[in-house]
Length: 293
Length: 253
Image (cartoon, rainbow over all chains, first blue to last red; front, top):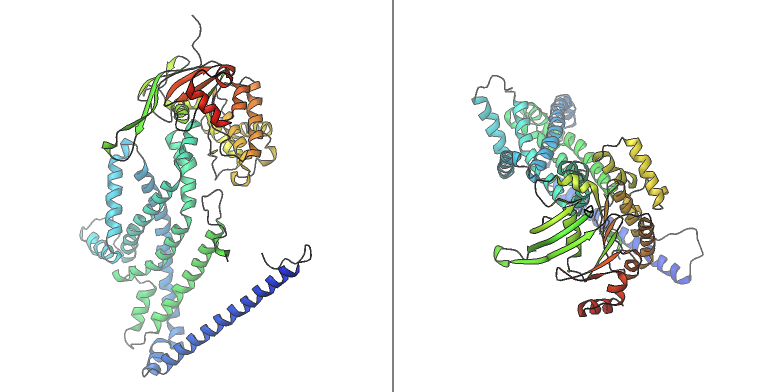
C-alpha cells in the first residue's frame, strides 16, 4: 500500500504521511531490538551465573557426547517417522470415513454410526498415555496369534486410535460447515444424496479444515515419541538407553533437537500452505483485517 | 381428453415449525395452492416476502415435502414418497437467489457436473455442450475461471447455464435478480427474455414487475400462502381487483 514507486507524482500530503509511517516503522524496529536484547542478556546472565551451570552444561550440552550418540538417536527417529507416516495415512482415511458415517442418514449405517459416536467419545476423552498402556499391555494379554506384539506396532496402534478420533471430529466440523444451500443446489440438479456428498460437500469440507488437520498431523509427528513408553526403540528410547551408565543427559537434548528439526519446518510449511489457501469462494470475510490501522 | 399440463399443483399445503420446541406450533406457509403451468408457458409468482413464493418453488423441485395436496408432473403425482425424487429433480432445474454455484469447481465443471453424473454423458460431449451454453449466456471466456472471480451478474448467468445443462422441462427461478446490484439486473433479465422467446417453460418468483409483464402468460399474486388474485399481467398488474394486490403494487413503485 505504501511505497508506490511509479505512477503519478505524490502530493505533499501523501509524502508527509509516508514519512510519518517510515518514522513509526523505524521506532518499532528500535523498540523490538532493544526488548529482545534485554531479554537475551537477562536469560544468559541468570543461567550462566547459576551455581550449577558448569555441571549442567557438561551433563546436557556435551558436544563430544552429542556427536557420539547421534547415529543411535537418529536411527530411533527413523522409527518415529515411519510410525508417523503410517498413522497419518491410516488416520486421515479412517477419520474421514468415520465423519461421513456420522453425518450420514442412511438407515443401514445406523449401527456403524452408534459405534462411531462411542469410539470418538471414548478416545477423545481418555489420556493418550492411558490408551498406550491399555493397548500396549492389554492386547498382548489376549494372546491372539495373528496380532503383532512388537512395541512399535502396539504403540503406533494406540496413537493411531487416539488421533483417528481427533481427525474424525475435525472432518465432521468441516462437513457441517458446508452450507445447506450447496446441497440444495446439487440435489436440485438431480444428484443423488451420495453424489452430492462426494462431489460437492466433501471437497469443500476438506478444504475448510485443511489447516486444523495439518496441525493435527504435526502434533502426531511429535506424539509418535510416546511409543517409547512401551519400549519401542525410537529416538527418545535410544536417548534414554544412552544416558544409562554415565548420567550424561546430552542424548535427550539431541533427540529434542532432531524432533525440532522436523517439526519446525513442517509447521512453517503448513502455515505457508494454509495462508496460500485463500481458496475458492470460502466464506472467510476477514480479508485485510490485519492491515487495519 | 386433452393432455394434462406439464405441472399442476392441487390443494398444496405446507407448514414449518414456528419455533424451537414442540409447543411452538406450526406456521402455515402454503395454504391450499392450485396452479397449472402448461408446456412453453410462463407463470410468474408475485407477493411480498414470506408469502410462500420460495417454498412453492422448493416444493415443486421436491426440496421440501408437502403436508397435503398433489404435485402433478405430466399427470403423475410426484409428491408421493415412492416416486424416485432424484429422477424428478433431474427433469427440472432451479436457479437460486444466491446463485449457489459450487465454489470448488470451475465454471465449466459447475455446468457439466449434472450432465456427467446424472445424465451419464461422456466428459468430452458434456464439455462441448457446456461451452456452447456458456457462450450463449455470454461467459465463453470464463469457462476455466472460478465462481469467486465472477461478478454477481456473471455468477447468476453461470448458474442459469448450469440449470439449462440438463435440458430441463421446466425452469424454476427463485428471485434470481434480488441479490444483484441494480446495474447487473438487466444482463440477467435479458438472458431470461431470450430463453422465454425460445419457448422455455418457466415458473418464476420475482419482484421485477416490468419483467413479469413481459414474460408472463399468467401472474399469480400470493398472500398468506393462498392465491389471492390471478390473471394475465394486464389484469393483475395494471387493473388489480383486490385491495391487498393494489397495496402490494403501490408499495413497489
